[in-house]
Image (cartoon, rainbow, N blue to C red; front, top):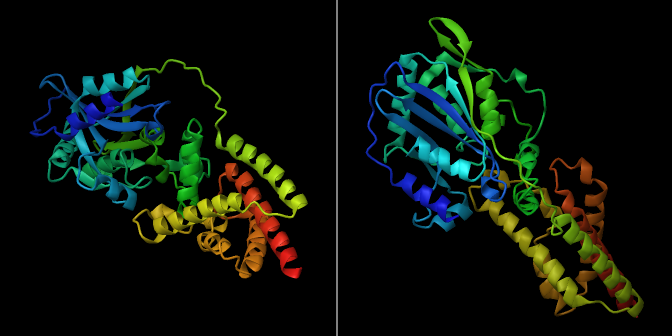
Length: 391
Protein backbone atom coordinates (compact mmCIF):
# COMPACT_ATOMS: atom_id res chain seq x y z
CA UNK A 1 0.00 0.00 0.00
CA UNK A 2 2.83 2.41 0.80
CA UNK A 3 4.23 1.72 -2.66
CA UNK A 4 0.89 2.55 -4.26
CA UNK A 5 0.54 5.78 -2.31
CA UNK A 6 4.07 6.75 -3.21
CA UNK A 7 3.34 6.29 -6.92
CA UNK A 8 0.16 8.36 -6.60
CA UNK A 9 2.00 11.20 -4.90
CA UNK A 10 4.67 11.15 -7.61
CA UNK A 11 2.05 11.28 -10.35
CA UNK A 12 0.07 14.05 -8.71
CA UNK A 13 3.10 16.28 -8.43
CA UNK A 14 4.34 15.69 -11.99
CA UNK A 15 4.40 19.01 -13.84
CA UNK A 16 6.27 20.90 -16.51
CA UNK A 17 5.33 18.58 -19.37
CA UNK A 18 5.65 20.35 -22.71
CA UNK A 19 4.32 19.46 -26.15
CA UNK A 20 7.03 18.35 -28.55
CA UNK A 21 7.10 17.38 -32.17
CA UNK A 22 7.07 13.63 -32.48
CA UNK A 23 9.39 11.86 -34.88
CA UNK A 24 8.46 9.21 -37.45
CA UNK A 25 9.59 6.57 -34.96
CA UNK A 26 7.04 7.62 -32.35
CA UNK A 27 4.24 5.26 -31.30
CA UNK A 28 1.00 5.79 -29.41
CA UNK A 29 -0.25 2.75 -27.51
CA UNK A 30 -3.13 1.75 -25.27
CA UNK A 31 -1.94 -0.06 -22.16
CA UNK A 32 -4.25 -2.50 -20.36
CA UNK A 33 -3.25 -3.79 -16.94
CA UNK A 34 -4.83 -6.74 -15.18
CA UNK A 35 -6.71 -6.62 -11.88
CA UNK A 36 -5.02 -6.76 -8.50
CA UNK A 37 -6.11 -9.95 -6.74
CA UNK A 38 -5.43 -8.69 -3.21
CA UNK A 39 -6.56 -5.03 -3.27
CA UNK A 40 -10.29 -4.67 -3.84
CA UNK A 41 -10.38 -1.18 -5.35
CA UNK A 42 -7.81 -2.30 -7.94
CA UNK A 43 -9.82 -5.39 -8.88
CA UNK A 44 -11.13 -4.03 -12.19
CA UNK A 45 -7.77 -3.55 -13.89
CA UNK A 46 -6.50 -0.32 -15.38
CA UNK A 47 -5.98 1.50 -18.67
CA UNK A 48 -3.50 4.15 -19.78
CA UNK A 49 -1.87 5.66 -22.85
CA UNK A 50 1.79 5.22 -23.71
CA UNK A 51 3.65 7.71 -25.88
CA UNK A 52 7.04 6.37 -26.91
CA UNK A 53 9.50 8.19 -29.18
CA UNK A 54 13.02 6.74 -29.08
CA UNK A 55 14.35 9.62 -31.16
CA UNK A 56 13.32 12.33 -28.69
CA UNK A 57 13.63 10.18 -25.55
CA UNK A 58 9.91 10.38 -24.70
CA UNK A 59 8.42 7.33 -23.00
CA UNK A 60 5.43 8.44 -20.90
CA UNK A 61 2.40 6.75 -19.38
CA UNK A 62 -0.68 8.98 -19.28
CA UNK A 63 -2.85 7.75 -16.43
CA UNK A 64 -6.38 9.03 -15.72
CA UNK A 65 -6.74 7.05 -12.50
CA UNK A 66 -5.14 9.47 -10.05
CA UNK A 67 -6.71 11.03 -6.98
CA UNK A 68 -5.20 13.17 -4.23
CA UNK A 69 -5.61 11.90 -0.65
CA UNK A 70 -4.42 15.26 0.66
CA UNK A 71 -7.13 17.20 -1.11
CA UNK A 72 -9.22 19.26 1.37
CA UNK A 73 -12.41 17.42 2.39
CA UNK A 74 -11.36 14.38 0.34
CA UNK A 75 -13.32 11.92 2.52
CA UNK A 76 -16.43 14.11 2.64
CA UNK A 77 -16.41 14.69 -1.12
CA UNK A 78 -15.87 10.98 -1.75
CA UNK A 79 -18.88 10.12 0.46
CA UNK A 80 -21.02 12.72 -1.33
CA UNK A 81 -20.04 11.43 -4.76
CA UNK A 82 -17.97 14.50 -5.64
CA UNK A 83 -15.00 12.41 -6.69
CA UNK A 84 -12.28 14.43 -8.40
CA UNK A 85 -9.72 12.41 -10.35
CA UNK A 86 -6.91 13.67 -12.51
CA UNK A 87 -4.58 12.82 -15.35
CA UNK A 88 -1.05 12.05 -14.20
CA UNK A 89 2.10 11.49 -16.27
CA UNK A 90 4.88 9.08 -15.40
CA UNK A 91 7.94 7.56 -17.04
CA UNK A 92 6.58 4.37 -18.58
CA UNK A 93 9.28 2.00 -17.22
CA UNK A 94 8.38 3.07 -13.69
CA UNK A 95 4.66 2.67 -14.43
CA UNK A 96 5.30 -0.76 -15.92
CA UNK A 97 7.43 -1.99 -13.02
CA UNK A 98 4.77 -1.17 -10.42
CA UNK A 99 2.27 -3.47 -12.17
CA UNK A 100 4.78 -6.27 -12.74
CA UNK A 101 5.67 -6.13 -9.05
CA UNK A 102 1.99 -6.75 -8.25
CA UNK A 103 1.83 -9.62 -10.77
CA UNK A 104 -0.69 -7.82 -12.98
CA UNK A 105 -0.58 -8.53 -16.70
CA UNK A 106 0.33 -5.70 -19.09
CA UNK A 107 -0.91 -5.64 -22.69
CA UNK A 108 0.17 -3.00 -25.19
CA UNK A 109 -1.82 -2.14 -28.32
CA UNK A 110 0.28 -0.08 -30.70
CA UNK A 111 -2.11 2.15 -32.64
CA UNK A 112 -2.04 2.33 -36.43
CA UNK A 113 -1.82 6.12 -36.76
CA UNK A 114 -0.21 8.53 -39.17
CA UNK A 115 2.38 10.94 -37.78
CA UNK A 116 -0.22 13.71 -37.90
CA UNK A 117 -2.71 11.61 -35.94
CA UNK A 118 -0.07 10.67 -33.38
CA UNK A 119 0.73 14.31 -32.88
CA UNK A 120 -2.95 15.13 -32.36
CA UNK A 121 -3.28 12.49 -29.63
CA UNK A 122 -0.04 13.54 -27.95
CA UNK A 123 -0.92 17.25 -28.05
CA UNK A 124 -4.32 16.52 -26.53
CA UNK A 125 -2.78 14.48 -23.73
CA UNK A 126 -0.19 17.16 -22.96
CA UNK A 127 -2.92 19.82 -22.86
CA UNK A 128 -5.07 17.61 -20.64
CA UNK A 129 -2.16 16.99 -18.25
CA UNK A 130 -1.67 20.70 -17.54
CA UNK A 131 -2.52 21.59 -13.90
CA UNK A 132 -5.51 23.70 -14.99
CA UNK A 133 -6.95 20.89 -17.19
CA UNK A 134 -6.03 17.60 -15.55
CA UNK A 135 -8.91 17.25 -13.07
CA UNK A 136 -12.28 15.74 -13.94
CA UNK A 137 -15.41 14.62 -12.03
CA UNK A 138 -15.10 10.85 -11.74
CA UNK A 139 -18.05 8.54 -12.40
CA UNK A 140 -17.71 4.83 -11.70
CA UNK A 141 -19.37 3.72 -14.93
CA UNK A 142 -19.45 6.61 -17.38
CA UNK A 143 -16.33 8.72 -16.83
CA UNK A 144 -13.43 6.79 -15.34
CA UNK A 145 -9.82 5.90 -16.10
CA UNK A 146 -10.94 3.37 -18.74
CA UNK A 147 -13.61 5.39 -20.56
CA UNK A 148 -11.15 8.29 -20.76
CA UNK A 149 -8.93 6.23 -23.08
CA UNK A 150 -11.80 5.76 -25.52
CA UNK A 151 -12.92 9.37 -25.17
CA UNK A 152 -9.44 10.80 -25.79
CA UNK A 153 -9.19 8.81 -29.01
CA UNK A 154 -12.56 10.17 -30.16
CA UNK A 155 -11.89 13.77 -29.09
CA UNK A 156 -8.39 13.98 -30.57
CA UNK A 157 -9.01 12.03 -33.79
CA UNK A 158 -12.64 12.96 -34.40
CA UNK A 159 -14.33 11.18 -37.30
CA UNK A 160 -11.04 9.46 -38.20
CA UNK A 161 -11.72 6.77 -35.58
CA UNK A 162 -14.76 4.52 -35.31
CA UNK A 163 -15.61 1.87 -32.71
CA UNK A 164 -17.65 -1.14 -33.88
CA UNK A 165 -19.55 -2.80 -31.03
CA UNK A 166 -21.10 -5.56 -33.14
CA UNK A 167 -18.65 -8.08 -31.67
CA UNK A 168 -20.47 -7.77 -28.31
CA UNK A 169 -23.07 -10.54 -28.37
CA UNK A 170 -23.97 -10.56 -24.67
CA UNK A 171 -26.67 -8.47 -23.01
CA UNK A 172 -25.19 -7.85 -19.56
CA UNK A 173 -26.24 -5.09 -17.21
CA UNK A 174 -23.68 -2.80 -15.62
CA UNK A 175 -24.19 -4.68 -12.35
CA UNK A 176 -23.55 -8.04 -14.00
CA UNK A 177 -20.39 -6.77 -15.66
CA UNK A 178 -19.20 -5.43 -12.30
CA UNK A 179 -19.99 -8.71 -10.53
CA UNK A 180 -17.61 -10.66 -12.78
CA UNK A 181 -14.67 -8.69 -11.40
CA UNK A 182 -15.79 -8.74 -7.77
CA UNK A 183 -15.89 -12.50 -7.27
CA UNK A 184 -12.60 -12.41 -5.30
CA UNK A 185 -14.09 -9.65 -3.11
CA UNK A 186 -17.57 -10.86 -2.03
CA UNK A 187 -17.97 -8.29 0.76
CA UNK A 188 -17.20 -5.41 -1.58
CA UNK A 189 -19.60 -6.93 -4.10
CA UNK A 190 -22.27 -7.07 -1.39
CA UNK A 191 -21.61 -3.48 -0.33
CA UNK A 192 -21.92 -2.21 -3.91
CA UNK A 193 -25.08 -4.24 -4.51
CA UNK A 194 -26.65 -2.84 -1.34
CA UNK A 195 -25.64 0.81 -1.83
CA UNK A 196 -26.24 1.17 -5.58
CA UNK A 197 -29.73 0.91 -6.96
CA UNK A 198 -31.68 0.38 -10.16
CA UNK A 199 -29.41 2.43 -12.51
CA UNK A 200 -26.81 -0.34 -12.17
CA UNK A 201 -29.27 -2.80 -13.70
CA UNK A 202 -29.41 -0.89 -16.98
CA UNK A 203 -28.45 -3.10 -19.91
CA UNK A 204 -25.10 -1.78 -21.11
CA UNK A 205 -24.55 -0.87 -24.73
CA UNK A 206 -21.33 -2.14 -26.37
CA UNK A 207 -19.95 1.40 -26.03
CA UNK A 208 -20.76 1.40 -22.31
CA UNK A 209 -18.99 -1.94 -21.79
CA UNK A 210 -15.82 0.13 -22.05
CA UNK A 211 -16.07 1.34 -18.47
CA UNK A 212 -13.96 -1.78 -17.88
CA UNK A 213 -10.31 -1.91 -19.06
CA UNK A 214 -10.69 -5.37 -20.63
CA UNK A 215 -13.45 -4.04 -22.86
CA UNK A 216 -11.40 -0.96 -23.72
CA UNK A 217 -8.78 -3.40 -25.02
CA UNK A 218 -11.30 -5.42 -27.03
CA UNK A 219 -13.03 -2.21 -28.17
CA UNK A 220 -9.77 -0.91 -29.67
CA UNK A 221 -9.17 -4.34 -31.23
CA UNK A 222 -12.43 -3.92 -33.16
CA UNK A 223 -12.06 -0.23 -34.03
CA UNK A 224 -10.96 1.25 -37.34
CA UNK A 225 -9.13 4.44 -38.25
CA UNK A 226 -9.12 6.50 -41.44
CA UNK A 227 -5.72 6.62 -43.08
CA UNK A 228 -5.27 8.17 -46.53
CA UNK A 229 -9.05 7.92 -47.10
CA UNK A 230 -9.00 4.19 -46.34
CA UNK A 231 -10.23 2.44 -43.21
CA UNK A 232 -7.68 0.25 -41.47
CA UNK A 233 -7.66 -1.55 -38.09
CA UNK A 234 -6.91 0.88 -35.29
CA UNK A 235 -4.54 -1.58 -33.59
CA UNK A 236 -1.38 -2.18 -35.59
CA UNK A 237 0.38 -4.53 -33.21
CA UNK A 238 -0.40 -6.20 -29.90
CA UNK A 239 2.43 -6.83 -27.43
CA UNK A 240 2.25 -8.85 -24.24
CA UNK A 241 4.65 -6.93 -22.01
CA UNK A 242 3.99 -9.12 -19.00
CA UNK A 243 1.85 -12.20 -18.33
CA UNK A 244 0.69 -12.67 -14.76
CA UNK A 245 1.96 -15.74 -12.96
CA UNK A 246 -0.62 -18.26 -11.66
CA UNK A 247 -1.63 -17.77 -8.05
CA UNK A 248 -3.48 -20.15 -5.77
CA UNK A 249 -7.06 -19.14 -5.12
CA UNK A 250 -8.22 -19.57 -1.55
CA UNK A 251 -11.71 -20.21 -0.22
CA UNK A 252 -12.85 -17.99 2.60
CA UNK A 253 -15.14 -19.16 5.37
CA UNK A 254 -16.11 -15.52 5.91
CA UNK A 255 -18.08 -15.32 2.66
CA UNK A 256 -21.22 -13.26 3.37
CA UNK A 257 -23.53 -16.10 2.34
CA UNK A 258 -21.91 -18.41 4.89
CA UNK A 259 -21.88 -15.74 7.60
CA UNK A 260 -25.53 -14.83 7.06
CA UNK A 261 -26.46 -18.51 6.70
CA UNK A 262 -24.95 -19.22 10.12
CA UNK A 263 -26.79 -16.21 11.55
CA UNK A 264 -30.03 -17.63 10.11
CA UNK A 265 -29.46 -20.92 11.91
CA UNK A 266 -28.85 -19.11 15.20
CA UNK A 267 -31.99 -17.05 14.59
CA UNK A 268 -34.05 -20.21 14.04
CA UNK A 269 -32.84 -21.57 17.38
CA UNK A 270 -33.71 -18.28 19.08
CA UNK A 271 -37.17 -18.21 17.44
CA UNK A 272 -37.98 -21.72 18.66
CA UNK A 273 -36.83 -20.78 22.16
CA UNK A 274 -38.91 -17.57 22.19
CA UNK A 275 -41.99 -19.36 20.82
CA UNK A 276 -42.04 -22.07 23.48
CA UNK A 277 -41.24 -19.65 26.28
CA UNK A 278 -43.79 -17.13 24.94
CA UNK A 279 -41.23 -14.41 25.58
CA UNK A 280 -39.54 -12.24 22.99
CA UNK A 281 -35.79 -11.71 22.86
CA UNK A 282 -36.21 -8.02 22.26
CA UNK A 283 -32.49 -7.39 22.69
CA UNK A 284 -31.87 -9.38 19.48
CA UNK A 285 -34.61 -7.59 17.55
CA UNK A 286 -33.43 -4.17 18.68
CA UNK A 287 -30.02 -4.96 17.19
CA UNK A 288 -31.46 -6.62 14.07
CA UNK A 289 -34.10 -4.06 13.14
CA UNK A 290 -31.99 -1.17 14.41
CA UNK A 291 -29.08 -2.05 12.12
CA UNK A 292 -31.28 -2.69 9.08
CA UNK A 293 -33.11 0.58 9.78
CA UNK A 294 -29.82 2.46 9.84
CA UNK A 295 -28.84 0.82 6.55
CA UNK A 296 -32.13 2.03 5.12
CA UNK A 297 -31.45 5.57 6.33
CA UNK A 298 -28.02 5.40 4.67
CA UNK A 299 -29.57 4.26 1.39
CA UNK A 300 -32.01 7.17 1.47
CA UNK A 301 -29.17 9.59 2.13
CA UNK A 302 -27.17 8.17 -0.78
CA UNK A 303 -30.21 8.46 -3.03
CA UNK A 304 -31.45 11.95 -2.17
CA UNK A 305 -28.51 13.81 -0.65
CA UNK A 306 -25.43 12.78 -2.64
CA UNK A 307 -24.29 12.90 -6.27
CA UNK A 308 -24.03 9.10 -6.48
CA UNK A 309 -26.39 8.76 -9.45
CA UNK A 310 -26.27 4.98 -9.34
CA UNK A 311 -27.65 5.01 -5.77
CA UNK A 312 -31.15 6.07 -6.91
CA UNK A 313 -34.29 3.87 -6.84
CA UNK A 314 -32.74 1.30 -4.54
CA UNK A 315 -34.88 -1.81 -4.07
CA UNK A 316 -32.83 -2.82 -1.02
CA UNK A 317 -35.12 -0.40 0.81
CA UNK A 318 -37.73 -3.17 0.66
CA UNK A 319 -35.85 -5.07 3.38
CA UNK A 320 -33.76 -2.29 4.92
CA UNK A 321 -36.76 -0.21 5.97
CA UNK A 322 -35.73 3.16 7.48
CA UNK A 323 -38.91 2.98 9.61
CA UNK A 324 -37.24 0.23 11.66
CA UNK A 325 -35.35 2.99 13.48
CA UNK A 326 -38.67 4.38 14.76
CA UNK A 327 -39.95 0.90 15.57
CA UNK A 328 -36.88 0.13 17.69
CA UNK A 329 -37.47 3.30 19.73
CA UNK A 330 -41.11 2.22 20.19
CA UNK A 331 -39.92 -1.09 21.69
CA UNK A 332 -39.14 0.77 24.90
CA UNK A 333 -42.71 2.00 25.36
CA UNK A 334 -44.43 -1.15 24.04
CA UNK A 335 -46.58 0.73 21.55
CA UNK A 336 -49.62 -1.25 20.39
CA UNK A 337 -49.15 -0.19 16.77
CA UNK A 338 -46.09 -2.43 16.64
CA UNK A 339 -48.45 -5.40 16.20
CA UNK A 340 -49.69 -4.15 12.86
CA UNK A 341 -46.24 -2.83 11.97
CA UNK A 342 -44.59 -6.24 12.28
CA UNK A 343 -47.44 -7.88 10.40
CA UNK A 344 -46.80 -5.44 7.55
CA UNK A 345 -43.04 -6.13 7.73
CA UNK A 346 -43.67 -9.88 7.61
CA UNK A 347 -45.92 -9.56 4.55
CA UNK A 348 -43.46 -7.23 2.79
CA UNK A 349 -40.49 -9.56 3.36
CA UNK A 350 -42.58 -12.52 2.16
CA UNK A 351 -43.39 -10.62 -1.05
CA UNK A 352 -39.70 -9.72 -1.51
CA UNK A 353 -38.69 -13.39 -1.20
CA UNK A 354 -41.53 -14.57 -3.45
CA UNK A 355 -40.66 -12.11 -6.23
CA UNK A 356 -36.88 -12.01 -5.62
CA UNK A 357 -36.01 -13.12 -9.15
CA UNK A 358 -38.62 -10.89 -10.77
CA UNK A 359 -37.54 -7.59 -9.23
CA UNK A 360 -36.17 -5.08 -11.76
CA UNK A 361 -33.10 -4.63 -9.54
CA UNK A 362 -30.86 -7.64 -9.05
CA UNK A 363 -30.44 -8.09 -5.30
CA UNK A 364 -27.39 -9.90 -3.95
CA UNK A 365 -28.24 -13.53 -3.20
CA UNK A 366 -26.22 -13.39 0.02
CA UNK A 367 -29.02 -11.21 1.38
CA UNK A 368 -31.63 -13.99 1.18
CA UNK A 369 -30.80 -15.31 4.68
CA UNK A 370 -31.01 -11.73 6.00
CA UNK A 371 -34.49 -11.26 4.54
CA UNK A 372 -35.58 -14.63 5.98
CA UNK A 373 -34.28 -13.57 9.39
CA UNK A 374 -36.24 -10.32 9.22
CA UNK A 375 -39.34 -12.25 8.12
CA UNK A 376 -39.08 -14.77 10.98
CA UNK A 377 -38.48 -12.18 13.68
CA UNK A 378 -41.26 -9.93 12.35
CA UNK A 379 -43.68 -12.89 12.36
CA UNK A 380 -42.70 -13.82 15.91
CA UNK A 381 -42.98 -10.21 17.07
CA UNK A 382 -46.46 -10.00 15.56
CA UNK A 383 -47.68 -13.36 16.89
CA UNK A 384 -46.49 -12.96 20.50
CA UNK A 385 -47.49 -9.29 20.74
CA UNK A 386 -50.93 -10.16 19.32
CA UNK A 387 -51.31 -12.99 21.79
CA UNK A 388 -50.29 -10.74 24.66
CA UNK A 389 -52.81 -8.07 23.64
CA UNK A 390 -55.66 -10.60 23.75
CA UNK A 391 -54.93 -11.73 27.28
